[in-house]
Amino acid sequence: MTNAFSSSASISAAGGNKVAINFDNLLLVEKPDSPLNSSFLHQTLEDCEGYLQKLPLQSPNAYSKIPSTITNMVNILTDSEADASFEKEKADGGRGRKEGEPDAVFDYSGTLMKAELAKAKSRVSHTKAPGVLGHVVKPGFISFYTMNGKTFAVSEGRWWLMKSPIKALWLNGHRNVSLDKDHISAGEVHIIRVLPGEVGLIRNQGTEVLLDVGTHIFNSGTATIVGKVTYSSQKYFHHGRYHYLRVERGYMAKVWTVVSVDGVETVVPRLIGQGIISLNLFLSDSRFFFKLSRLLQHLSH
Image (cartoon, rainbow, N blue to C red; front, side, top):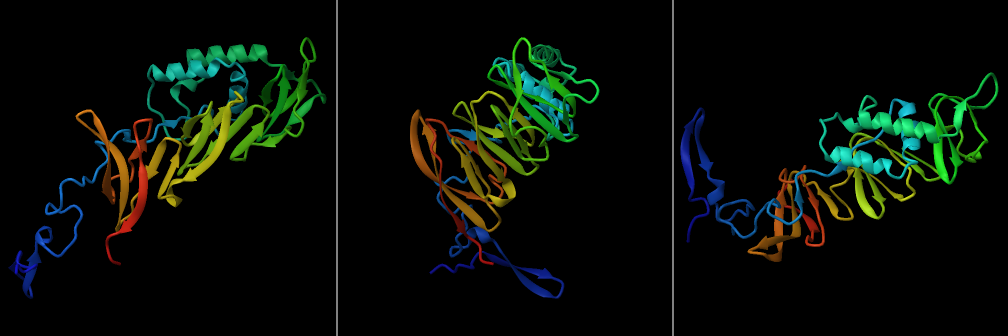
């Protein structure tokens, strides 16, 4: 019978001889990535249907530390075509951005942003109030009003609403709302703040959307808030077709996924080890199936 420790060699070291063992050749050690194991159980998802290098996170559209950009975006998005214009501009290319900052398309020096802001100012009903008249919005707060079935906002200052030709009304219960909240809902408006280490989960017109760090404004009436997830507290989460898996040291993940071989799609098992997909994320569509069976502890502590 073959000795399990036959692949060892003696080497000379200070203080005496020591034994160096080639663990890949040990017959009694179950090592998932050993060349002695079957090559059919691949330990990667890179060849699987729907594999992504990273999550497709939607960038914020306002600056968290500048309240006026939040109210401006609320008012800009009262035009149902404004959001599509911004998305088209982003799709045409743009420069990189820092975490928590909006995409370059939302830069106030940009042509598109200037045009959308000018159109928004022509639609609003609020104006600066003289003297002691009007409604006062405190620093760090925001107030909302409705007009023509749409929701508008004002930031710090003293304001009044013009009653002619269209009647505008302050939204009950939504005057002087603190911006120090992770989620503000008023009329058709949702303001969502995603903190570092989190990802926001929403559905927009029924489609799953993942939100990056920063402040996100929606004013379409079609956005549904699902919640937020903290990466450090979740080893696995999914939002509709998107999946995230983090495998810690000492564990392996057993998953089932789809591969395409010669045009034929097959569901296959995979074992994923530490670090292989710690930052890799997966997209599933009608062709893709992803199932986390369990996390297997493969090292003793």
